[in-house]
Picture 1 (tube, rainbow, N blue to C red):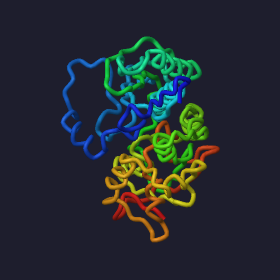
Picture 2: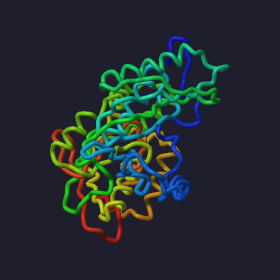
Picture 3: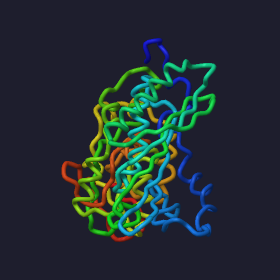
Picture 4: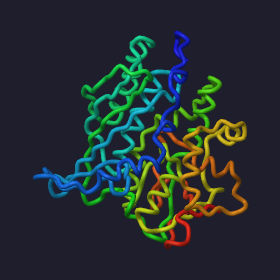
Length: 334
């Protein structure tokens, strides 16, 4: 809550990445955009829409690739400065998920100018600025609109070695799966929106950059990764397994969670986005009898600025399963 008593989360129908359009619906919308002929392109499109990866990658010369992404969402916490930091870290994460480094970002701001004071918007932008500064990423301008709901995020451009891009279609059977941040962000944010309770452990996790994890993954020889955001661990893992032509096996007991996450699920603080995530993956999912519905909801929990999921071992990250030869189900949870 701000010093004026304003609760930003009450001005939005959803919060953070839980307000994303459901994955199944989104895929049908963008299906017609794949495969367009481009006249005299300035570079080669290396990663595009085909497999729903985290960002677009264009190789502009040998050894140098440009990464482009955009991400914005409604308030996930009530504090405007923290919301700005979270949104910025989340937008930068797409570049890290491709194994790159962010170079420049521009703000994307929607603001209900007749409802919320611009002093709060300034705090949101200040949070984004500070995170970009800590990431070594220039923040230069942006775009704003008068919007009934407050929204904030960034369009980010980064660079990477074209030979070591992390992509979601490069997974191979027999490789372990590493998760670099605990889950449970979504259910804690849902509880925060409903009750006003503040969860510092969730804010700390959401504002932590994935820069170190990405560099460690590349250094360890990984070539397949994604970040865990609005589609939850199971949703993003489904996309990775499908794109790579493998199955993914998750050891539910090995997955780390934030303090309070299990209690939040037990108390019913589950977003509609999380429930839609689980329903989307169910046709492709086999879960053992020891895995409860609450376990599955946590695995499908819509994360905001979550960690990286890497095909390979990353120092300091939890190993939560492995990729396996393609079987009857793309996802197996035991």
